[in-house]
Image (cartoon, rainbow, N blue to C red):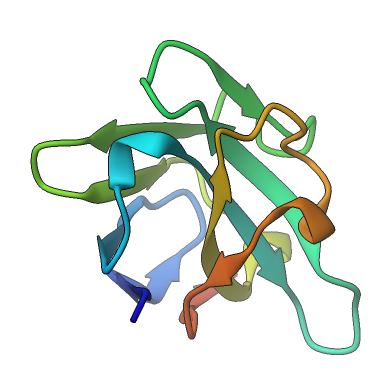
Length: 124
């Protein structure tokens, strides 16, 4: 049974930082590209960032470029999202997802497995 478990969310002031983690089990982690998505109240699910299965390529949404960094540790079956310079508009539930040898990273339909999400709230 595949499980993706996010952690690291919380309440932070504008300008602050957080690091999200997503621990995977039940799959061959090194065979999956991993992505982060977010959903703010009343809004659609939005792609944030993705990293290829080997970690050599990453892709970020324009809204987070220069502020967010995705990384992974295949030995620990974990993907991370470092978020800096957080703003109130970054407030959302953040989800990690797994995409088998995925190369189309921005489309949610490409991801077969999803975590339950972790809440990030940025106060002004």
